[in-house]
Amino acid sequence: MGLLNGGISERAGFPGGPARSRHRTDSAEGIEMTMACMSITCRFLLTLVFFSAAATKLRGRSDLAQFRATVREFGVGPRWSSAAAGAVIAGELVAASLMLFDAAALAGLGLAAVLLAAFTGAIGSAVRRGATTSCRCFGASDQPMGMRHVARNAILLLITAAGVTGTLLAPGGAGGLDVTALILSGFVAVVLATLVIAYDDLVALVLVR
Image (cartoon, rainbow, N blue to C red; front, side):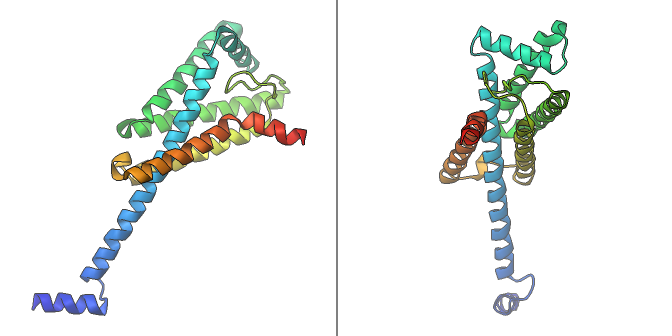
């Protein structure tokens, strides 16, 4: 009798039937996989961006000295500029490292959000004061700080929020994805990170035209 009732429910499409249950399970798995892809893509993108930002500041003594000068333009006194520059670089490296691991992803994303919010506020304040220093987020640059850098950071904050959402809804992280999905997520992250890192150069090309 139970089997008969189950068969009738499945054929009739009654709520709670086996067909409906399988459909809901497949839907939930599909959503979780999508969220996992979003989480991995956002985390890998941000990891590349933050690692690149730190590496370009540490590339040589002149790069580090120029970044310290930029920090002073943000209103940090000469006495504290070295410590502030070191804290920024350390924060970038820690955030990037944490985001590589599923278990520490939320901590890394949280730190990334704090850093990006601080950068956005500092750049916005400097622009309002009329500062003309170059943005050295990714090493030496001829492009002065402007609202386009605030917009770039705002986009990165949105990506961070998407990463948090994906991580919360797909706690399994990379473990819930197959090789193809991981490769695709990585490819998208690399392309987008390259665009972010080359942002100033791309803007300069557009302005020249």
